[in-house]
Image 1 (cartoon, helix red, strand yellow):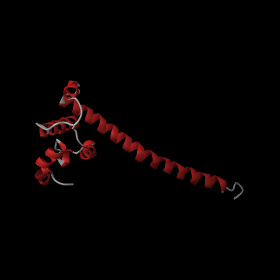
Image 2 (cartoon, one colour):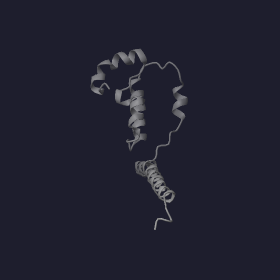
Image 3 (tube, one colour):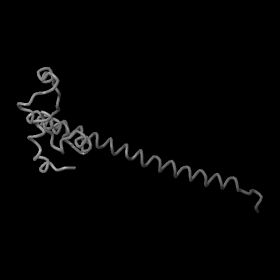
Image 4 (cartoon, one colour):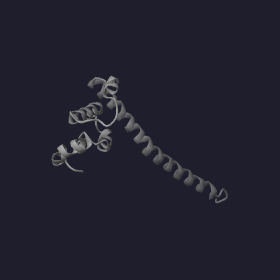
Length: 129
């Protein structure tokens, strides 16, 4: 990935051509890739949109009604609430990880145990003595 610093050389031309500029780290593919580990994802997204909007000052937007778009309220929970949500999601992720790793391992162990005892039963000789 091109660093933000190296990408700056093309800012003016990109704004002139496209009407806005996005840093490589703020491309949605990169934001999405890092979203799972971003405890403040809402703030990250707000900053990305703010940076795009600031880069577009004076540029014509090809479509869309900015006034209508700006009327939409996007609720952003307090940082404390975001931290709580991240904590809950991390616990859920750990639980799902345990289930997706632990459960198959447990099933494999029980299957092996079943096959062992089945083999013992099938080869049991009651008249050996």
